[in-house]
Length: 208
Image 1 (cartoon, rainbow, N blue to C red):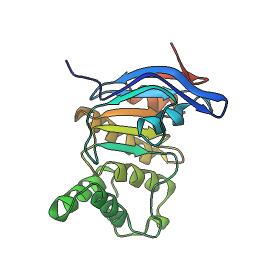
Image 2 (cartoon, rainbow, N blue to C red):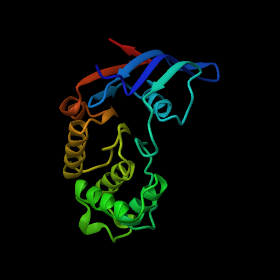
Image 3 (cartoon, helix red, strand yellow):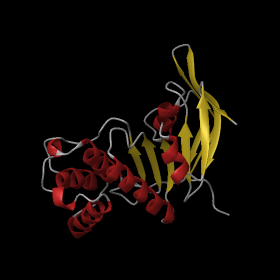
Image 4 (tube, one colour):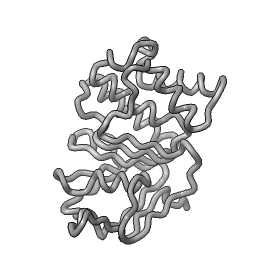
């Protein structure tokens, strides 16, 4: 039986005297998309930051599968793009950061440009992209490695319908390839379309 790619065991997070998350326990398996919903301030983004190892929990434990560089992809709400660089240059930068080079880097960047349908915009500066194109490129940059765990915080915010459809299709392809996904979104229709199960956060706790 497969082991969870990530497991949260009674994690807690406090900001000062305020408890913002937990105690919370959750497991995510390879090839599973878990949708996370909840009101603003429910702890969704905090959960993803802890999953990405950007923040540490104040209590409990996060147990991850052994992930090599590039096998964890994190897409925060804020765009992680260099606006003055072209789309391909952005991909090249992140590909180099995870250790790709030469033909392997070019091949991976070509694959990702095709995945998010930005081949014809690859040589244009990101600053010239529409909001939806930027969101698609943001996703592509998170996928430059052989991603086994993908963390998404409102990845379609501000995106048009075609861009949203492309990103949801990309998630289903990743799922088929065995990637585990934690998807935070306030678009319930998107969550229901792609998620294997959904958890609701309320005041930092999972509501069954």
